[in-house]
Image 1 (cartoon, rainbow, N blue to C red):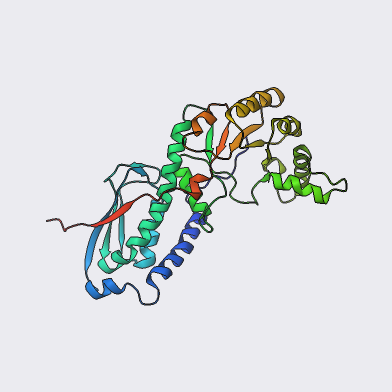
Image 2: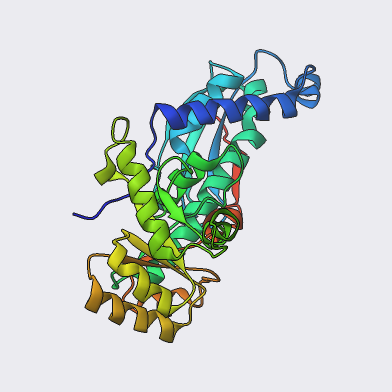
Amino acid sequence: MKKEFHQCHWDDVLQADWRALLRLAIDEDLGRAGDLTTRSLVPRDAIGRASISARQSGVVAGLFGVKTALDAVDQNLAWSPEMADGQTVEQGGRIGVISGPAQGLFAVERLLLNFLGRLSGIATLTHKYVELAAGTQARIFDTRKTTPGWRRLEKYAVRCGGGWNHRSGLFEAVLIKDNHLAWGADSLAESSCYTPAEAVLLARRYIAEQAANTDPSAVIVEVEVDTLEQLDQVLPAGPDIVLLDNMSIEQLREAVARRDKIDPHVEIEASGGVTLSTVRQIAETGIERISVGALTHSPAAMDFGLDWMKDEG
């Protein structure tokens, strides 16, 4: 059975991240004086209703945290969702309604739209990559190129868009990269770099020695290679995943063929320079994983708006 990285779902851990970020966002927006404009113009006892609508089509993420955000500003604000995380909203579509104290509504508006825009932008971009890879065996994965403090929430948004989470942090899996291999030049008496195979075996040995605290069979060992020759050398060492860095389409196809002959149980991941215009070709080479840093480091925020609703009747 294939090993898998931890996949982010909305749970107590994500809720704690959300609360921590909310505290920072509220402090930077309201400071000690609060919303000066609203307090000047809106009566303290005024009640209102407003809808949150999409100014563009996309995949929604972050709705699980809306009520928490409202409570952080004013616990008398009520939330009536009309969509769920992971659903697609069309331009102009309504995702929910907020009602309650008008001063609180004004205070929470930008804070809430910023959170929803960031996470929904990630979900929407991820969905585009997933759609382009549809029909192949390749899955779209995120990376650790995330906003500090937002990682788990951003990875959750990737899941909302249909993507998969790579390791959540350095603690979760072994990922041997070129700098780890190069470090061997200073650490070994013969002044040579680690080979990828040597590094995999050392990692396996270390994980086995930690068996008292970790199930060694559950820990993923992944290794990055730059050439097809390195791939041939490392496959007999038994990595779970081989990461092919910046290889051409032809090289990826050849890598799959070589892997299938030597050890078809090892999964292949492509990384480096993956874009919406290239992901389909990459997926069609037969690899199982495509990691895309752009999912979290450069998505455009999705545009939402808050619109006041007139009282019915």
